[in-house]
Amino acid sequence: MKPSMTRRDFMKRSSQTMIAAATIPYFLKSEQARAFAVPDPNNMTLNDVYAHFGISEGHIRDIMSEALSQGGDYCDVFFQHNIYNVIGLEDKAVNRAYTEVGLGVGIRVLKGDQTGYSFTEELTPKAMKLAAKTAAAIASEGKSMPPQALKLHETPDYYPIETPWEQVGIDEKIPFLQTINDKVFALDKRIIKSNIYFINDSSTILIATSDGRVAYDYQPMSRIYVSCTAEQDNQRESNSFDLAGRRGIGFYSPETVDRLASEAVRRTVSLFEAIKPEAGEMPVVLAAGSSGILLHEAIGHGMEADFNRKKVSIFSDKIDKPVAEKFVSIVDDGTNPYIRGSLNIDDEANDTEKTYLVENGILRSYLHDRISAQHYGVKPTGNGRRESFRHPVQPRMRNTYMENGPHTMEEIIGHVDKGLYAETFTNGEVYIGAGDFTFYVKSGALIEGGKITRPVKDVNIIGNGPEVLKNIIMVGNDMKMAEGGWTCGKNGQGVPVSMGLPTVLVSGITVGGVNA
Image 1: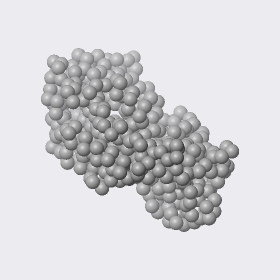
Image 2: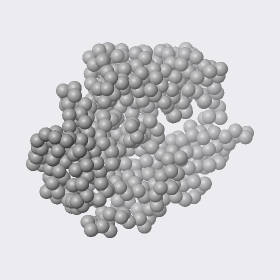
Image 3: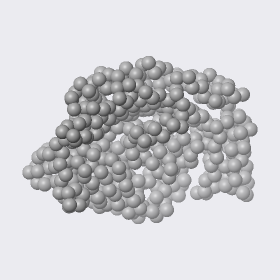
Image 4: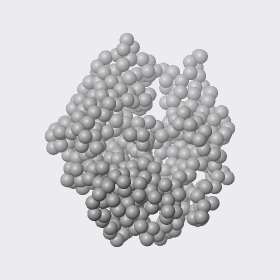
């Protein structure tokens, strides 16, 4: 799990792409030339989406017939057109801009729990049928089954935006970067460097299944990331802050811009006063919000159904058994408005939902895609996800968070005589089977005598996710979703996610500090 845009990632992407302003996707020059404009998501119809991809229902039925010709049980097709834009400011100047455009279709065939998958970036009948034939090879015998007639599946809209990103010019984005940059330097004279990225992307997707469902979605996303470096007495410190979500440009109000600058500066200059705590096991208070990354990594992955179906996860035999105190409830939710991991439909055209993983301390469900749901004899939970049309579906998290508990933050902090307050994490590593983890605390503080005191730095926490779950002894009533841009990695695929947490007290976690 990592923030979706580090400098290394940015540079890697930039070296592989081209400057945005005059980029024309190659597919516009093909025999299937079509208008570049994405259909208006506020008035989009199924026929608009068919026309955008240059296909018809007849093309889809032909693809499916080919995909099922070798005896497959089921198939689906996933069309996607994605536009990804980045503008970067460094050393007080806007010096980078590029666009990535992706267009194609992925074709999946299932035979039992086996998957055949193929994709093509050429949306011609010949190329698509060839891809379908490749995917069909997972099944080599048996009677072919014709696809059912397609019926449009109506979906909700958890992320309506007034102005699609395709209608927002680069000239409308640059002023945000310049304003944030000026505010960062004005807030503290110790700031010597800033880096700011404005990232937006959108995907138009169309999914059709051989059991007769067809659905489409327009999926917007944006993020502004601010990092800065400060210097004091020959000591340099760096930190960052970002805001992300399925948002349009209207989200970035003057108040939001002010917060991006001020929070990045606050986190950075606070490190001049930070100390290294003593090492050892101690109570740890996880702050409300983005410290939910520990919940996501150390616990959430272990509740994805494929790991349990394969008996990899420590939770594989824990359904309907207690795994935490009765005041602990954990959900994975695809329906949170505007949150980064939310989805109107998953990548199998299933409805998303609020799925209880742990309810009042009892493990109730795993996160399912079509294959795992069939294995367990349950309905899919809307967690079938993929990075793009080039990738097959896997069970993946969306927005994973703990619900509110009975305590206040003040009660929780006051309960700790000596411990660690962990606010933000980075550079985590998790062994999914057992749930063992290590995380670097980027921002945090000591708790002394029931009060938050001195900030800390250079701290790792080391533990086991299921044990941490058992050792949660207080849960606050201040649940907050993470606001930044997180991308979850699994089996070589990355998908946008979010997480959340109220203030939580864990009775003991190993802290690696001085003399560790």
